Length: 462
Image (cartoon, rainbow, N blue to C red; front, side, top):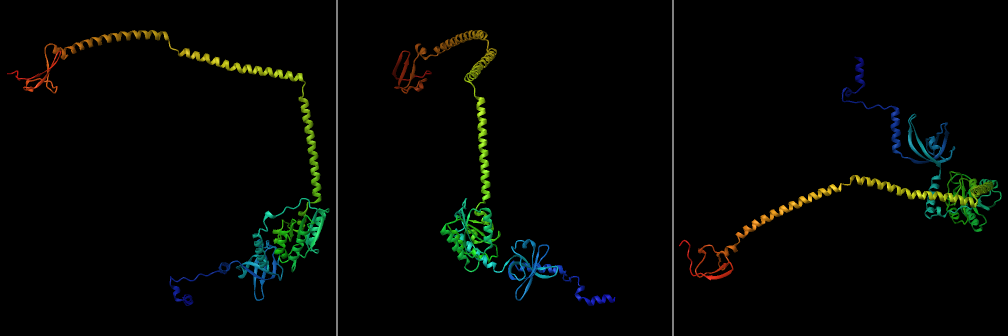
């Protein structure tokens, strides 16, 4: 009972109400997950600038560091899948800009940023300037493939625009000495970085264009940061390359570096050494190609001679004496004559056999004409007799009808003294009642007619 009373005092009175529900209790993990989702939804990917501190590269390949400025700091992580595309490994004190997602590391509850991309500080403005100039010159068709010039197949001299102190010059000269020691090299010195370097590089390019003493021009520099390579991203250099009368190969920086000069040049090389290799085919390659061509030519000539010898042998075997040839033609002619005879007779024989078969079929189906003639004669006699009998019967019937008709002929009646009386309208009169005194009547007799006037009418009954 005492324990129950203690519980009553510990909870409010409405706790006993069945409708009362206590608020949910979150775990620390759930809380951190909700806070992390809230941060990620609230803050999109943003660029953050600061200084690298406490940089650690884990065995897994992930980067862990602190990004700080003069007043604050934030923990940062860049996972291996993103770090491998960074292009450089930051060091303590480096000024960088990172594109990151604001989140929370749930295991410790630490607020941190997940870095998606990293670049050196200031690179963003330079990259924007790079894109603006690229778009501007591209709109002027300065980078069109149609204006690119092909490199000479056999270069006799090569020009190089670079600094005499540059390591890239040594690499290029070493490559040319190894590959094409017979080609003359002309250096057009120019600083490759620093204030006003782009104008001097453009002047060196135009000097080579005016002199026209080389067949191809290399514009090269070794690798470095975007700031170090910026002279090759400026407009004077690009326009000088486009206006140069000599084909230009750009070999600036490393394989992943791209500059405006690369787009304006007729050909881009990944490195200065690669530019030297593209400028001229190695002498050893030409000698090897010539040796291969000579071998191909020799083998082709040998093959032609072998084919000609074999053809000559075949013609020799086919060559016959005139008498043998005539005999062969005679045999061939006899064979053709036999074939022609067979070809002519065979259709005639086939048609003869076919004709005999048709005659047999016609004989089987031909009617007996003599029996038919006998039957036809008998039928003809019967027909003549029948027609004669029918004609006699018709004549006799006609005579009887003619006699009857003659008896009924009105003319015969008139010849016996009778007459036909009709009024003026031609109506035949049959009774005295149809006649009036003084009527003019027509009387038809056997041999003519007469008109009479009626003096009086007397009925037969009177």
